[in-house]
Image (tube, rainbow, N blue to C red; front, top):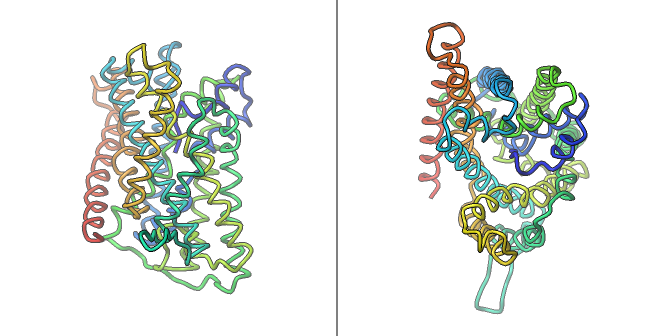
Length: 408
């Protein structure tokens, strides 16, 4: 998950002009994230044949990434995803896209807290907070509160450049997690003996939604493009990022599925035996992700809220701290009562990522280029992508909400 506003690394690159390799790193870091932990569950939900849909989603999101670049080429003043939306649909388009992006970031922040609490409970299953005889807070909920306290100092910062550099290690963290999972299979006595299911029709909507989450980095694409020294290399940069990201997701999902079959948990780290060193490496690496990324996820949301305030309040340090504190408290409350990480991520994918990575790039391109005025293969292709994302969004949302109702 990525946002234009949480990438000071890209801002520095824009001043200096990023090289091909740095652009490849930024691109891969934009797409390779917490989707790595849920993609094995996605494969388990849909079965082996669901990988056909995974590759289809990869191709479509690569194409929509190129569409964003094409939109930017029409006007040199376009620097961001919001600029593209405004160029296509005016101020209302910009506001709508801003709401979509910030809603996605808010939900992802909740997901990060659930992710942290689930993995801490995996390491310390008997932990609880007991205050005399009056109050006992069980393991998962207690870790949500502890996570909020750990994150609180970073939420009080308005300059997050240091955290941005730490979070940029996400690519290496994902590779470490993949290597650790493989070591568990080879040396941990788990093996690779599960056959899995060929296809599970009932689980396909959830699988597709979680596959879509894996490619949620489109809001960062314009920043990567504008930061490059040689912009004509952008297509190669995007291709490299997608190939590396796809291979990492594919290896993680396949290795995990043949290790645990249909018993794969919503986060693959929850399957790993905690006594093994390789498992501990994977889990502790996972624990770093929420701590380093939570504040970066919510800072754009806080900035958007502050931007809507009057001039007397928007630049007030006290108001900025209050807005960030309220966001932290609200996400903590939701994570406290809502333990279903996989359903939350499926909703994020089926609604917000489907819009941001599929529908909006196509609509913006058709509007800016006026391609909608004539029927051709390009128009048909864009319409097919829009219809696919719409169908996936409807079925994925229905499936996730139905599962939530059943669980409650």
